[in-house]
Amino acid sequence: MNMRLSSILLTSVFCIAGLSLYAQDTGENEIETFLEEHTIVSCKIVTKIVSNTEEILWSVESKRVTISGKSIDVVLEGDDITIEATFTPYLQEDGSIFLIAIGEVFIGKLGQQGVEYASSFRSLPVEKGERFLFFPLGLALDENTNMYSIEMELTMLPYTELLGETE
Amino acid sequence: MSICPNESDLSAWIDGELSERERSTIESHIAHCESCSKIIQEFEQLRHTLHLDIYYHPDEPDEISITSSDNTSRWKVFFKKYSQSLVGIPAAIGFGFILASALALMPNQRAESNQFTYSNTSQSYTETSLPQSLSLAMRSELINEIYSKEPIRITIPSSHSVNLKSHGNPHFTTDTELLRDIVR
Image 1: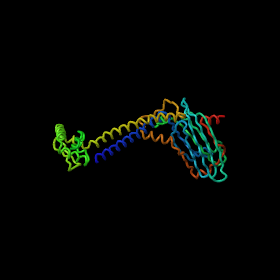
Image 2: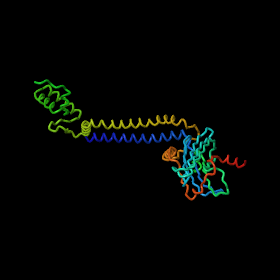
Image 3: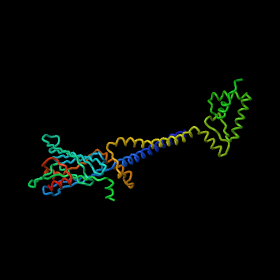
Image 4: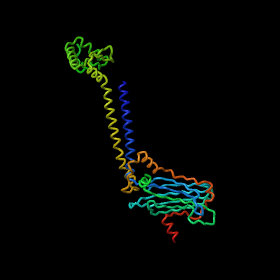
């Protein structure tokens, strides 16, 4: 009986070992396959609040990695303002990036009446490392008014190049 | 006189593999059957030659006594006693090995199906491979980040929010375009 129990235990151990081996192997293989098939793009997004005198009042940097065709979503929230931006890079064979960007701006308290809405869409080729800029509140600033503007600056680099920079 | 049991039954009787009823039937038969007693003697001699000095004791149905101190015989006895259970061990090893091998082969098939899944977005590049120094954990983290559905959330400080007013439509541009516009 003890031997039978041992056999059952041994079978279980082998099953668990087999499953863990499978899990590890699956994980490794899937990761390797994935990484071989896709070029990973690293996106650096710098969000700034700029005064009408071009002074940077506030800035925050975010990083995210993605692959061709997979969007990066950014949600910028203030007291009475919500900005949603979606950047989708499509990697071209020549190494350039074709970028599709969608921006939506909600001014006012969401869920309440009187919310102003504006949106924009743009698709254009960008070079690796070239700065892509998004001005959710518009581009032209009147220097005579005390208004701030938001700038979102997006830079894309293949992840391998970024690793080379850091090394 | 009852009909003589066949040799396999007699062998089973020696091995103690029979039920109480079968055992008593055979025992009552061999008590007055010379030919069967002779067969049994032959079996016992054969067992002795093979160093399997096992004798069945009807009083202790679940026990088998070892009358030889020979280690080889002990192992044989042990093996005989637990032969049914011992079959389970190699079977378990075999099963585990087959399971592991079969499952290890599966990811390749899955990888092939992934190729199909990602075919609409993937491109062929020469610079795709990541350095080997990048650990598996980091690679795994990268993939998790890529497939993260969470947007990047940034909160604008209240002190700056108040002065944010729309002064035009949302606008996208690049450095190059911006410079061109300024030059114009």
